Image 1 (cartoon, rainbow, N blue to C red):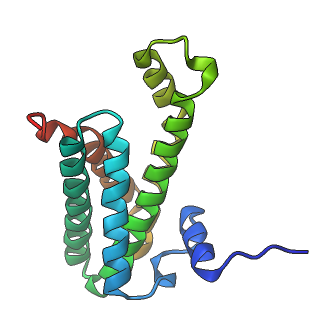
Image 2 (image 1 turned 45 degrees about the vertical axis):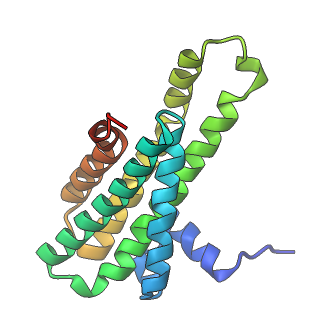
Image 3 (image 1 turned 180 degrees about the vertical axis):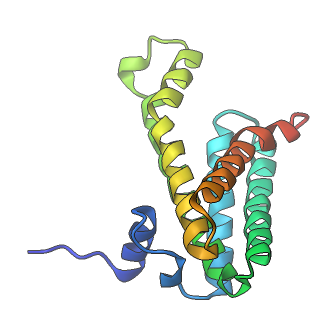
Length: 179
């Protein structure tokens, strides 16, 4: 018996596997809004494990706006504005899934009974080390989507993806230091 996933899940898995691009997603402003909110929520959950809820919420909203701004700017620069809704939906969906998986695995590691004796800072460092490949996966997903959506050169796609992720994960929370 062969198990087949529903079509929407197959499309999301295909994007995360780097097999299909954003063109498989519908041009739906509603789906885009849901994916952007899911992305902001995933960033919030991730940042809430390190910072206050206000700072995490501000980071989530700012990261979602930053992702949308970069996608819009890149669509305008490359002349592929007609692909913006699907590309931004795929970027937000892929980013949300990867960030949520990283947050969930980090939580599982953090509450692991075998690590209960270690100080919290050591467990956080271990978690960051073990889950580093997920950051790399996020870079590959974003680079693939930029390349597929806007016909960017591979080096440029990776440069944009790396810069975007560094800003979202590290610089955006620093902007809200007072919260």
